[in-house]
Image (cartoon, rainbow over all chains, first blue to last red; front, side, top):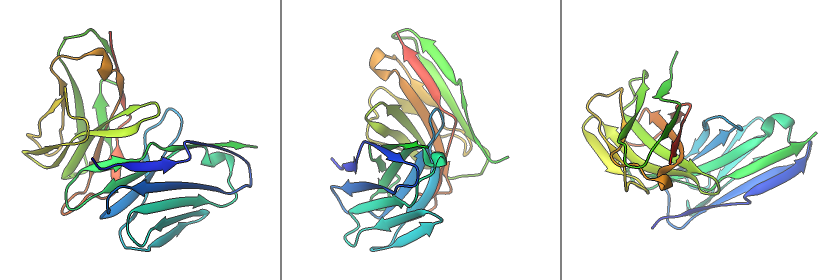
Length: 111
Length: 114
């Protein structure tokens, strides 16, 4: 069945360093969503990408959707301790409501 | 306040005892979904509903039932819970329409089946 692989599983960085997490789908996606989950909390929506090759920025966060709509990345510039949490991608295929989440990347930031 | 509520937040039960986890949203969203979260596996979709009276299987529907009789409510039913259903469960809702947009998640229900 459809799979979305996310790497790395864990990342420890020094505050101020950059961070990137990658998602790869086994099938072409209609769109991809990104979520952040703080420890003990629930996932919170960050962004949705729809178009091939799309790039969106939110302050220090940059999101990309691959040309083939099978991969995506989230890049954080100059991490801060407030960036700590687990980042998930979620891919949607077609017009169904079936979402496949990646396994998540847990980010730890050392002050 | 726009929100998704789940009840109960914590539940310890025994194998085979039927239970229902309720989910309600006050945003008039068409789309609702249930997920389970297990360490190392991320979030896995159990069932989703694009609108009232329309439900579909997600990735891991076995052992679960849902219903969508009203727009605001989407209960998750475990007819005969087993220990492998011990997990953290999240309900989510979204504007929906022709696709799935920003999902709002509930606070989660931690279920332990002994």
